[in-house]
Image 1 (cartoon, one colour):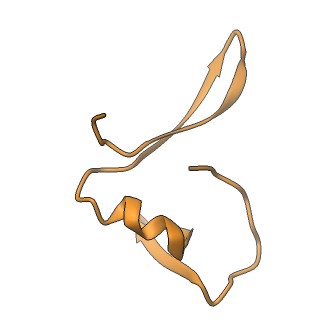
Image 2: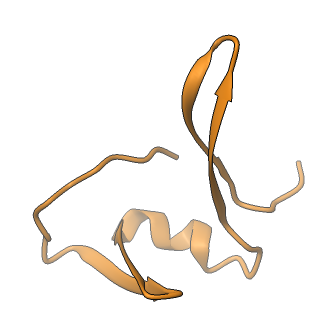
Length: 60
């Protein structure tokens, strides 16, 4: 999984709204969302760098 800022909407994108925030997902990502497990996106700063961390709630 990955995260990127994009200003253009593609016809293949899936538009979700969560707490007033619009989220565009590539339709290929829908299989990760439809698992029933929550998806959490957090921003983290560590001694190794900073960035977004995506957790889909699945257990391996």
